[in-house]
Amino acid sequence: MNSGVNYIPLFTPNVPQSAIEAVSRTLNSRWIGQGPQVDEFEELLSKTFCGGDPGIAVGSGTDALHLAYLLAGIGPGDEVIVPIFTCTATNIPLLYIGAKLIFVDVDPVTMNIDFDHLSGLISEKTKAIAVVDFGGCPVDYVKLYELIGERNIKVIQDAAHSIGGSYGGVSVGSMADFTIFSFQAIKHITTGDGGYLSFKNRDLLPMARRLRWFGIDRVSKSKGHWDNDIKEIGYKYQMTDISAAMGIAGLNEFPQTLELRKTLFRQYLSHLSSSNKVSVIADSNNYDGHAAWVFSIHVEQREKLQQKLIEQGIESSQVHYRNDRYSIFGSKVPNLKNMDKVEETYLVLPLHTKMANSDVDRICDVILSD
Image (cartoon, rainbow, N blue to C red; front, top):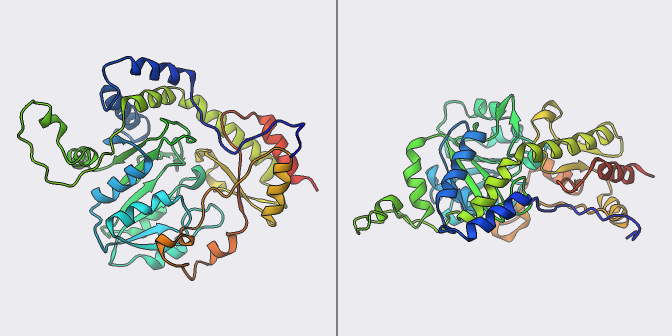
C-alpha cells in the first residue's frame, strides 16, 4: 500500500455528536431499556418515511424481517420467492420458520430482482415475495404489483439499504405490505444495531408488539395484576431507549446525511457513468430516487482492480454474495444465468459521511487509470 496517501475505508459509522450526547443523557435517566424514546423514534419513522403507517422498532433489521414473515402468515413449507443476491439476513429468518425458499435471479443492471425470471416463478403456491433494494436502488414496486395482480401474495421490502429513497415519487417505506429498515453500525442512521418494521395493516400492530416481547401484552402487564395469558410464541426483539436516543439524533440530521451521500453518488456518476472500463450498478431512470448507501460497479478483472485500489489506500469489497453459496441454503441453484454471469464482476466502492468529493475523484482516477 502507498503509505503517502490518506486511507479511504469502505465503510465507517456515522455517529453524530448529538447522538453521543443523547446516549449520555439516557444513561443518566430512568429508562435505558424499552421506554418513551422507543415510542418517539417509532412515531418519527412512521411520519418521516412510511406515510403514517404503523410500525415497531426492534433490535436489528433481521428481527424486523423475522417478524414481517410471521405477520405475513408465512408458515412451515410455504413457498416464498427471495433474492439470490442479498445479505443473508433477508433469507435466514425464513429458515427459522421452515419456509421453502425459491431463489430469483438478479437484474445485472441493478442487482435487484430480475422481473423476467420472477414472472416464471410465481404460482398458486407462492405465499410471499421478499425483495431487497440493493445499495439504495429501489425495486420497481409498480411493476412488481402489476406482476402479482389479484393474487393474494404479500410483498416484504428489505429496505436496509434504501431509507430515504423513492421510486416514481413514492417514498421507500410506503410501497410494500411490509417494509424493514436497518440501523446497523454502517447504515445511513445507526443505533449501534437496530431495525424497524412498518406494515400497511394497522390491525397487526397489537400482535407485532406482542411478538416483539415474549408474546406478552405489555400494556396489560403494566396494570400490576397477573391477568394476561401468553398465546403466541414471542421473542426478545425490542429496541432500547439507548438505541432509540441514537436513532432520534441520527434522524434529526438525516436530511444532511442523505444529501452528502447523494452528492458523493452523483460525483461517482459524473466520472464513471460513461466509462468503457466499468459499468455503474443502478437504475439510470431513477438516479434521483437512489438512497446512496453504496456505489457499485461491474468490472472485468475485478481482483486486479481491487489490488490496484488497495495499493493506493482504497478499500473495496463484494460485501454480499449469492446466498446459494452457503450450505444452509442447500446447493447451488441452476439456471440463474444473470447471477452466474456477474458473480465475478460486481464491486462495491467507498461511500460514507467521512468522505469528500475529492476522495471520489481520487478513487475514480485510480479506476480509470491505465
